Length: 230
Image (tube, rainbow, N blue to C red; front, side, top):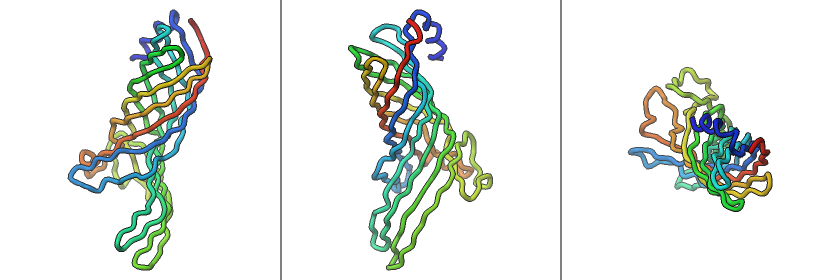
């Protein structure tokens, strides 16, 4: 609705559009009710974002920024904890890929920018990868593999998934905020994306309300904007 409203002002407002690329430093926050086994991710996953950015300027100081981005999120952790019986060495990595639509209000002063606003994202694919060894009472074993993660809006039935497949909830949303600087056509931004949705799919055994994990992403991006009108 915001985008449709802004288009009506484009004829008398400055309108910029251009390609945008970014580096994501992704992680997830976990909340498990009645369970103390939340994973503690000890590294953040490096990922990427690519797409198109748009800026509708209402004045020199205020604008509305949006666009459409293909963005990769998820989390990673190194399996290096040593228990009394098992010694792990390796990693596990979870990848969520989205098409994301942000809508940010921007305040500008002398090239500097402060922005904040909501986003909505739709999952398109994902992957779960693992590669580690473990030593159990002197016997070392190696484990590696990968699994496709399918985005699902409704209930997930295990019987509908192949052996190398699992699911994640397709709809995500949250809040973005950050700072930036524009020099001629280049716009450099650094921000934080706070996911408010639950990526846990709706399994048939209905445990989604008890287990929640949400995206957390630090992003550094560069865009080149073309003026299309004043």
